[in-house]
Image (cartoon, rainbow, N blue to C red; front, side, top):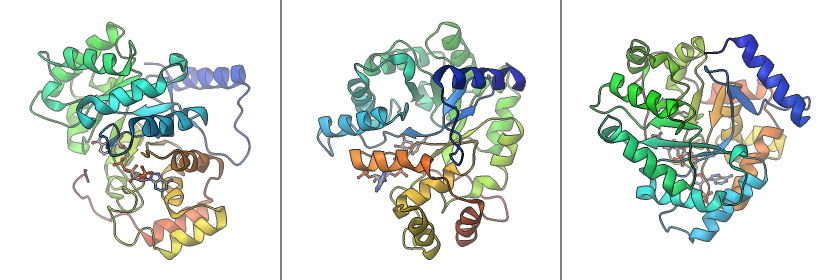
Length: 310
Ligand SMILES: NC(=O)c1ccc[n+]([C@@H]2O[C@H](COP(=O)([O-])OP(=O)(O)OC[C@H]3O[C@@H](n4cnc5c(N)ncnc54)[C@H](OP(=O)(O)O)[C@@H]3O)[C@@H](O)[C@H]2O)c1
């Protein structure tokens, strides 16, 4: 583990090298993880991609449009399209400098133990056409004990197959249990459902994670194009903020998530124009007043609620 000072040094050094001091008025593009490394805050999701709903080449072009616009993080999983999403990502990133990309994949819970994790990981790497992942996640909690999954993850780190690991869909109770496992504190993110219309994590999980500097990777940040919460896209508050920024309501949903500087968001799109619209959100951050307007229109619950999942 690297202390905060060291992590800040690493960030300053990187920004200086690339000459990328964020211009005034933009949100930070990266977040610092518990291991001191940095991770992009905006990525591209891939659930439902690679399933043949749209032509393969069109979906690959959408991901490439994002990469060309500077979106370097791609989130995928062995589950998505039964490996098809990883194959799509592998095709999309072909020809790009691997070092400039940030690839995240996930292992099924039933594969997250001694017998199967390594095989799953190697299959993901083959489909992606790479020899390491930047981050590997336990997709959700199953029957394999957390300590066994952590052991396997740590071994994969030691062997250079993954740079770091995290979890997904773990609630506060699960996270506390994880921290009691040897090297469980090496967990770098918790990927959970979070959008303007589903803010339950703000009651308990999010403050707890913040206390440990473990960022949230927000999945379904667009509420699946508004489908997950009635009234979201038609809301007067959303439209008011959209008009002020020249945004679509969908961009406002993403901007709401990204207003919180320690949140990572991974909207998914198979359409280049949508990917570019999502990428543009980082350049036009919400004011605190706009954030409050949205927040009041769709308040977080005032009591703990079960973790929302898709
Ligand atoms: N860990 C987990 O258990 C878990 C669960 C769910 C999701 N995830 C991850 O999180 C990612 C995001 O979640 P999600 O895919 O469920 O939903 P989402 O990103 O909230 O919404 C995706 C939907 O929004 C549309 N869209 C995207 N950008 C748009 C734009 N700028 N304008 C208009 N429409 C837009 C997409 O359609 P078009 O293709 O037509 O643009 C698609 O229908 C997933 O892809 C996956 O990588 C993880």
